[in-house]
Length: 585
Image 1 (cartoon, rainbow, N blue to C red):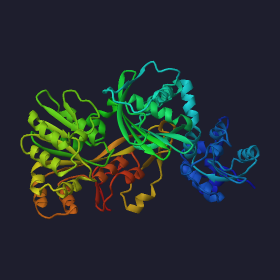
Image 2: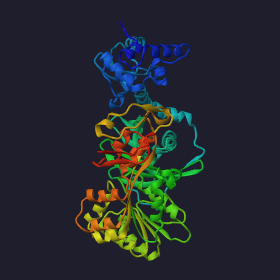
Image 3: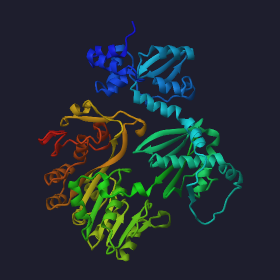
Image 4: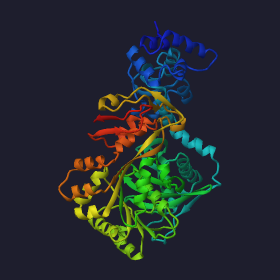
């Protein structure tokens, strides 16, 4: 006898017969599935339904994102049917078709698909949002390209501005390449990609050639997402079009190239940084999108705790010293430095930045872009800047001893220096400076403070819901919270459950006890212990407080924030719990 969803959930102990009766009464007259109503009533969540069905029916529980679904397999079930019935074909072997379903008890759909395809169906289970996200990824590829081309007939408010540079000699006749790249469909496709990426709040566009197609992906909130595919036969035309607008050599396909361009969209200008890289299937292109309206964020908009804002501003307003911002690539270091510069910028200060490259233009500040090819390095530029009577100097990155030494000595001679270092946290930054050869006495004298940071994704506000405590809470012994939240996935967040990012921070101030410790042989653990005794809150503690506030998830902070064996001390109430909790990690 074929069971129904309600019976399976009762057998699993997730709902009562009364719960089912209430849900069925609500379902009458509504065009909604029972599972959807049970979730809306708060009796269960998507994951619980999927796990219960998997266990009770002995069917595999899958993640659709783990499957690379060929076009010929996806075409076995029309997109309209897939969306309506929440079903996705995963793979075909001989006369069998593996499908993922949110409701594997929908026997009518199973029978219809089997009849229409002439195949025997093997059913696996996946949460509804997981299937819908995969449907968008699989079916939305080439279809999205041509649909967008049809929907947007012209770009009256869009202008792509070619980067000007002197004419250079051409080795071959490139008339045919220009002709292909200026065909209206190609111009329209490239413009559509740029406009769509800006509207999607993407930071980068990846154009990746494969054997039989070209894949386009956007980086949104730090994560890459498949957007569309386009045919292989227009690959060279699209690449040539992008090279032309960024003034790159379209005849050079064997060496990497870097270029710039810009896009004027309505009333704002987006700067574009283009990078090409030869691969076995053709040139891969990455376009970095620099939007001044999103890149220049005030300090309060970065998610920095109030407890850090005041001391950080006091440090940044000192007449001399050095503030270092540390973190991996993409952790928002430049954004933080720009926010600080905007805050301390006044008509009485001469502020000069040395960057590679200059990402955003700042009014009232002199910005210099380094160029290693002509000898304009960080160190050489810094020497010249010191002769320009600066009050504040921002050095994009300290990469070597020479730059570190000049920056440190500048910080001791009446200048305030801001810079970045690629390290994991505040204490490892001190170790890094000494490791590259900077004497400990110079480190303790010059460095005023170190700010470590990471960017973590925020739970999507449109699909945020309460969830069960993650297994990681017990596994790592984290302090329990009254409530945990996650995003179940929706169109607003592209079915990821996350939308937007926020910073987590750790501020270490150079104190007298710390200077004494650095002056002798020390370990990072000893440095961390002194810092904590003086009130330093670690990256992970700041991240955990954002979990407690319902801003992000445990899974997200574990994947982005360095986790150390230390005491996690949270002084703020945890979801309404008044006592301070401490747990040894």
